[in-house]
Length: 302
Image (cartoon, rainbow, N blue to C red; front, side):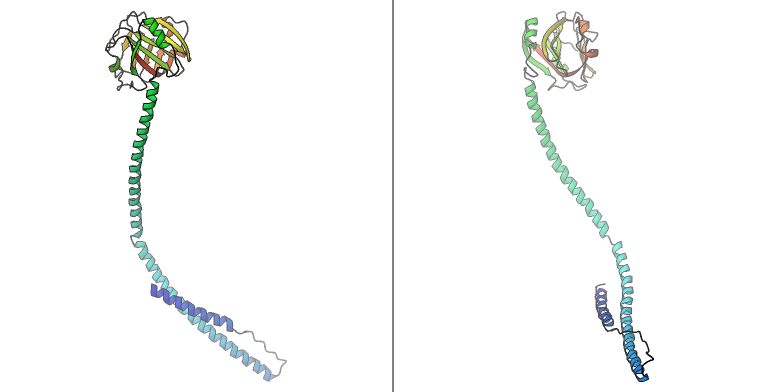
């Protein structure tokens, strides 16, 4: 192919010279016999035209032959080019290119995954640090505003807050994985303090020991309201029911209930019920007696 390209290039250059010579030296081929002039003059003019026309024909022939050679070589070139194109089309270069693209893509993906895993570990570490800091702050008894819950319950029970034994901010209370039972079972003198999404704070106090899947009878227990729509208050209502408190199983949908009719109870999906009227309250605390849990704390008294 390289030799053919060179030969064709040489022929084209040669033909170009012939063509330029043809254009530059071409004579006028239009002859007009002026019959008004003497015969000798007419012959001389015609002979001169003949000689020039003969030169034109000769140059035409030379150019034609030159172009014919170029044309024939181009035909040969065309066949060889088609053959070469067919060979190139059948070669595996394109397949090899596709393969290297796929392999390089896999390497890029492997590199990306490795870097992604490192970043995800870092993100997880940052998130854990953040959650730890938030959890520590929310453990403060001053979290969500200072109120008189501890003071008022202390007055009503003649006891003081000893320690928080369960806090939903950090302790699991989901169905099947809850640690709630392990934290409170067998313990007595407990305050169940609930906060909802609307700034209400309320709960119940249980003096008797919490039993496993068994109603607790506690004549001294009561429920209370210590904050309504973010404003401090304190209302106490006796339960007056032998079936005072029930701790559900770990696998149950419900978490716990005060009173057998479940007038005050919480489910593990965060839904709660609080029918204040059934405890003697004159007003409804919630629309349809329903609320959404924001936080659950269980505090032991002493």
